[in-house]
Image (cartoon, rainbow over all chains, first blue to last red):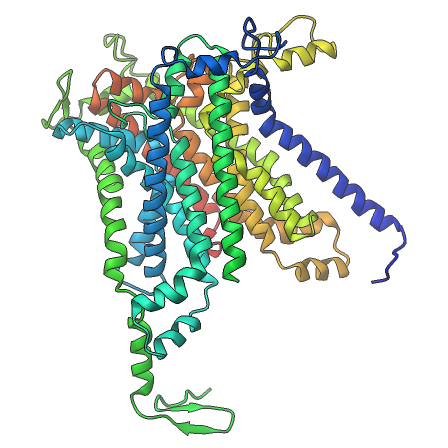
Length: 278
Length: 326
């Protein structure tokens, strides 16, 4: 290609099309982010302002209301439980999806059934799992808890995502590295620890990201299964049945910012590990 | 063609003898390398058994049990299936009408209708985005960055994203203000929030990213050389789309549609937030009957939901072969 190309009609048409798509992409972003941005702005509503524009002054009043223990119930506790739950789900998702993907590198009996069962976790709506497990536990007499029943169905939901990520990682994995280590007499554990693990760590982090964020925000699967103590999405839902106040926007903003920070953190770790594993 | 004998293998220099049994031994090592499969799959398989398979089986079982008002007894009955098809709501059991479809079937029908509308809108809005990312953006870094920007909402709470529609659509919301300012309307309209409009809009916004992802992946897989060849032979952009890009992106479309289909069929929270609980989806019906401890009837509703979803997914799979994608 010449360094300087002429501005032919063909090129002009292409640039025009690309420009059109770019504009559409921008509108699309406004569509998917617009409401959230409006909510962010409104969360700084003045003391006497309401849940819609115009802003009556700018304040942190509704955030202060959020921290007061009386207004929305046990908010800090709910947030703590949600984070704790998300961390446990993250670890289990990363562990299980790595193990499963390693198993699927070989052919084994029942591989097809297991694959579709894992994928079913993606397909079965949360309400069905919630209902099935909740009524079963009621019948048997085991009280549901966020760290037992809710944890169980959360992992069912996050596992397929992590599993697909790890399958993709092993698809591009060069097995000859492991074989070389084995030929030199390394034990299975040594091979895994010294060869496999460093190469797949970025994938494990990505699987963990799905585990954490999807569990942290999960509502449908927790609805009937959290038991006595609410997680954060349940608390948000509960506060919506009362009169809508800007506190809800403050809560939404705080929770979203936290989600975004976590995504940023994971992506940061992923990038660092990915560079190191090359 | 003649297959080389198992004890020999053909190299560059010619056919050389290989010590007998060496290939078998090598195969065996390869098969047995790595951790034992049983240990790798057992924990996850058990987990899925307890928290996925058993709950679904118990829904099926409980749908035949009898409600006692506060729990269930294992007396098998088909009463709740009958109620599902013939009853006009549980609170006025006398009002039965055997000609009209029951309120539950109509709820399932309207849930299905909404799902189809939202799926169509998501495809319409999402496909050009995926196309833009995969075909128009050349640099891989930009592709990835723009794609991630689209996917970030998927990792944030959908409940909060539903709540965020309220300041947009309310009577004094931004959309009304905007329409007033450009003189499309002369007084605020109320149909924006708590209506079919807001419900559809919110669902599309919440789920459209789910179809952008798979379509993007299947478009990104298309070999540029094919497109070049088609262009060189004088194909118009429309022809290229109809003959190459369209068919090759179908698996991605199908996966995205399946995603959206199953998620919205089981949807209940958005209906409450932006529709003000004025409508019921099958999801809200299930929750309501759970709340009044009529577990068998909730189970029947859940089962019907599951069945209609399976039918929908099977139809999509019949239309498009997605195995190429997996």
